[in-house]
Image 1 (cartoon, rainbow, N blue to C red):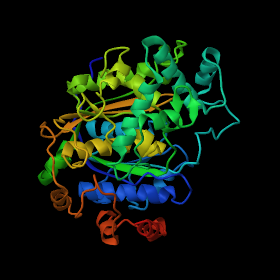
Image 2: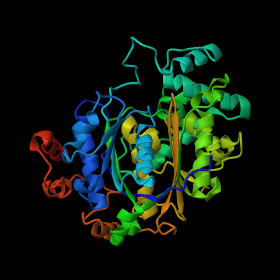
Image 3: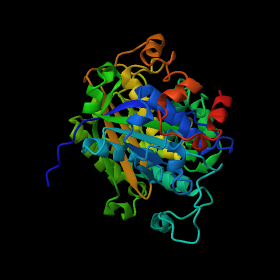
Image 4: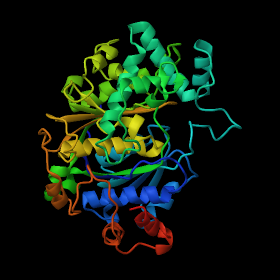
Length: 458
């Protein structure tokens, strides 16, 4: 069946919290509230404009989304709670885009948040089959099991296979991490902003060959949000068209039978990533070489290595050579993870995909002036969840032009906030909150003391 023509969907507003260590000091209600308020301020809308709400999180009881959204207002709109493992945030974006593109809504608010436990990811339901049970069994059958965290074993094994098949070296994976850490210093929202030498990364504690600790993303608490709107909604606000970013192509894909081919690379969702990339790029009418910038799912350096290949940036089996040539940073062919990626920025599961979106939106607007990538016309996002789901999204400016570079003073005037959120992580005032909450359909009982707690952190 031929694909139906989709109506345009734009990202009009984005906002996020700083990603922080999971120490239980900030609750999900605060994280989601802060991100949502910032996104609505950025879009210059109020909650009364929102027709559908999508809440993205992995760890929490049912209807955490309503608990967060009711703080904005109680307007009786549909609120959907989404959990799709590490791709939860971008799954919410894909759902929102489908609502807008199908004509079901003109304005959708997507909020991702996560309050995590310290340490490696753990299963919380041990009285039933783990959804990754068949994946773990395949790993045990083909590569064995060690005492390392399960995710590190699986992605590390994919890195080992890439070494065995194509000749990559441990230092190639370490170089990926070195670059991501180097990029993080310019991202005010990054959990870590430390620069390391290649030797320091290789000499950090071993986790699972070829991975060392500094090549693994940390668990994090954080929130991110995006406002998605239709062409009609945008046309009614022509003064905002310069900040609207078009979702030009997108695909949410799940696994193919090759998942269980006994390949460690295939076991990490290679096929669904490649499929999602091809579909999204075809919809947008672009090819890998058209991208100057990409935010991809570097939960481990080994995953970034195989993704460089799967997304088509390198020739098949040549991702390590692409890295060695300096092609994934400034001055190369495509700047990968200018935000610092998951390795430095952190990985609060429900917020990650939306934070990737925010980073790329800021670049395409020209607001990320401390880390801008020259000649950016298209931006690529990749978000992966084992189990599985891969979401690949192509973004471009509404006017189709290359991104400009706008100074922060000008940004502060355009957004009426007085600062540039792409380069400075700030809070907000009670007046800001009043501007975006529902005018009439609010109940202060839903807000409790969230505002006081948010203000205390800034």
